[in-house]
Amino acid sequence: MEFDELKILLKQQLNEHQPQKSADDLSVLLGKKTQSVIGKIKKSLRLELITSIIFLIVFAYFGIAGNFWSLRVYLSVFAVIFFLFFFVLLFLLQKTIKLSSTSLPVKANLQFIVHIIKEYVKRSFQLTMIFIPVSIVFMIILAHNDPSRQIITGNENHLFQNSMQEVIFFIVYIAVFSVGMYFFTKWYLKKLYGNYLNQLEALIKELEE
Picture (cartoon, rainbow, N blue to C red):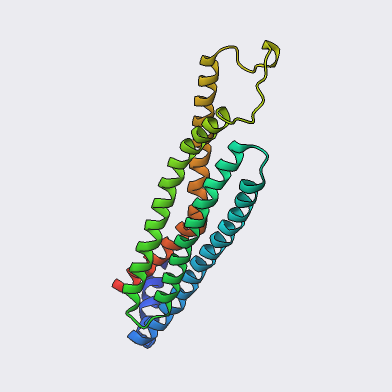
């Protein structure tokens, strides 16, 4: 008898002598796994909540106390964005906590949690990609129209010889910065949520089997 065949035969014999786990036992086991994964997702949401509060405070402070009009407007706008973002994260956290502690069927809860977190990750990535060029262009417009900015004269103080060079520089800058943020945002969201979503989807498949 081949060694592989012997292993299969022994495994079958062991399985025959092992008592079959009941549906309740499997439910408890899967419940422990899901609570562990959901706990990590809640930790990620809390981390983002704390981060958004920190950025909100910093941006609001410099938006009020900044020396330049353009900087104050720019940071004040993003302080409002972080303020709104805080309530989105708070809603997701509360929803996740409620679903993970309810007595509704485990599978239905998991599917809904996966759905709302996936939707958040998708929209968060899309908005980040939109905000990158918009925020840079917004910053350039504000800086150009800042009444308190100092106008530097003299060719030796100019970085660009003509407006075309300036336009090309900003286009390249926006492109490079956007590509860098694309990969960073992908990694960041995957680190916080992507891996845990994959684990929850695997648990859902276990429940369906």
